[in-house]
Amino acid sequence: MKIAVLVSGGVDSAVVVDKLFKEGHDLHLFYIRIGMDNDQGDCSAEEDIEMCTLIARKYNLPLKVVSLHEEYWDNVMAYTLRTVKDGLTPHPDMMCNKMIKFGFFEERWGKEFDKTATGHYASVKEIDGKYYLATAVDPVKDQTDFLAQISYKQLSHLIFPLGNIPKSEVRRLASEAGLPNAVRKDSQGICFLGKINYNDFLERQLGTKAGPVIEIETGKKIGEHRGYWFYTIGQRKGLGLGGGPWYVVKKNVRDNVVYVSNGYDTRAQYGRTIPVEEMHWITGNPFETKKEREEASHETGATGEEEKISIAFKTRHSPEFYQGYIFRNSDGGYVVESSTDIQGIAPGQFAIIYTPDRSLCLGSGMISLPAIKKRRRTKKRDGGSDSMLPNHN
Image 1 (cartoon, rainbow, N blue to C red):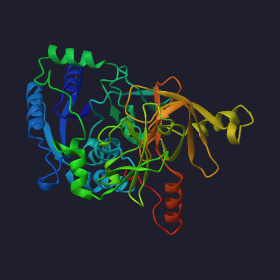
Image 2 (image 1 turned 135 degrees about the vertical axis):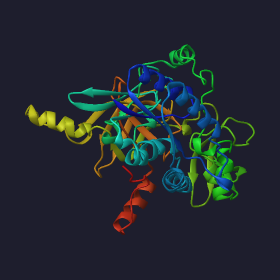
Image 3 (image 1 turned 60 degrees about the vertical axis):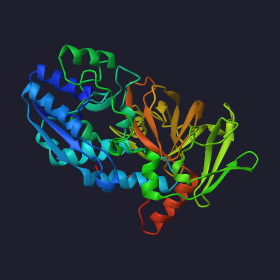
Image 4 (image 1 turned 30 degrees about the horizontal axis):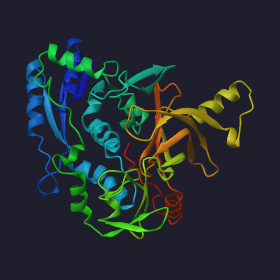
């Protein structure tokens, strides 16, 4: 096959090159520049490009450096800042995959190839003629939660060669192949920031605005913060409060108030009901599939509270799954009910939906608040957009 391989300079994508090259594919390497320039950040890509160049030379493969900096700023960065200003917690890595790596890149370069390959820890499985996003064999490195907003069209053009290889094995393969980045550390943090601290970036873009920190149980002011946009629900570190631990449990965006609760096991930081909006199903809506099966077998479909589907799910990047179910409510939205308590349910983040056996990632939806839903419905009724997510496919 003629394959476009997205390389980053890291060991994962380098092993993908080695693996596909040994399988005899026609490989073309691409490095996507999305780092910020000048006073907007400090993300030097030169070291990464140098490493990619060494990999390309080792296998005598073409390497093309392409820039999607403006597209990243206009879409992923705009989404991130807009979400933070609304008091929500963004997921820029998820939007980068959906819009940049498998959006703009595919439209401009990837479509010329049979497949696009990356070093993500995930898999693509074909079941009954349809493609599904499947979890990786390494539960700690699994990245399906970062891919849970991609479209079916995007998924059908992707391959993830590391899906069935543990990270420890990837390191071993890199050493055996003599790859120049075999012992290079994995990148951490948000790619576009480089060496810039995330809070420093937010301060540069949004400034500061002092406000009270309130203990939610007593209503007592116990400190001050620099702006609600620096804090997320469930946050514990960086609050600067004595007598902890303290957890952020609520934010009042209008009045710039951050509410906290004290104690390792405070009930205020837990919940089991997760409202979800803008639900995105990758391969198909399981509720519609269930309805089709019932009609085909002449069964009577359940309605109301009984119309629910058992699932596994995540609310953050972690090897830990939760069990529960998802159902549709009367206004067309979705609700995830967990069988156990969830710590730090952060509106703006995503509920990632999996099959109960955790083998397939079905899609994701943004965790919402009733107030957010009401505001969006008003905007839609007035002719505005009711969506926080970018519309790029």
